[in-house]
Image (cartoon, rainbow, N blue to C red):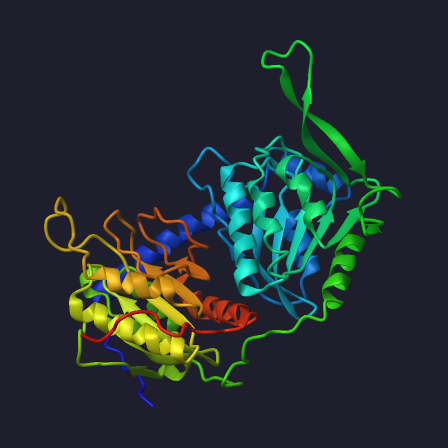
Length: 461
């Protein structure tokens, strides 16, 4: 057992300055989250409630097990764009009848619930998370906007069937555009009587049209005795009850191993210190300080501690789950660093151990006009792409065009607040919540079988 020590001095002015910087960034993010939670504004929220309908987060709260956590994904998507904050949809991972599920809920108070490019990307990402992690998917649908019926969402959700991931759809009201295909693509369809109505887009020839064809919306089947619903709900609460009933009858079991330690010890060091570490300069960032505040009992066994020391690798546990850690530098890898990392990825796959990539990004040292030498990154990129164990990514610092990406296709990717944020991820989190968020992710990835590749690349000269 190797317990990580810490060198942070809470009285150091740099410590206090870093903490203050991160808290200000978190305050800005909280403003964006408040805007997302407000939906289409007080007028439309009041009108929605007056019709006896629930808001998307209210629907999710009633759907999930009482007092269970909900890991919301990309809650501030589209922030700073011309589209509403949150992208008109709420997505995340939560527990229903003791089963971890992905939940997608349209926000009908925002611009008619229209599907915009951010909405489509957010839903596709949620569907992808459901697929690769083998998590049942529950769609809470009410999307009456015109949207962009390009079929992208439908295509992504249709891929869940061959992966044998069950899908459940509850339709609460008028649903058009791309979202109108969701009831037909789901294994279980529930519609709220008197409110749910589904319309799709069909090309129909229209005389006098300039190009001979006009795309016209036509009603398919309204919810009713002759409708496509497997079950009809009397109201929204009844629809959510029926959705919980469907999940309960899935007879769903996790295929991955349970946590190795049932009652893990918390880290020995204060997680509040992560506020300071989040604002660290790339040249001074110390990943061991982060691991000391997120791993169980601050216990970390470093792999090859005397070789290629700028790249940190090693083993630990997080909420009882074994995990391998790869902390990559902001600069391109040297040959020795790449060899060390590839060797470690090979061992993680040989032992079917999930990997946490901890990366502090930023421009490489030297002249910013120079193209960085990334030739030694190639073996690591190749090994990461061949690795089949779950990858989790935690990013600290701003992302630039020079920031290397050596993590393959991660199951989940989160970041700490930074002054610049140009990458797409599953959300910006409070550094103090890192251990909880990663623990929820590790639990989710173990819903699927955790298997490693036989070999990921060359790691010895």
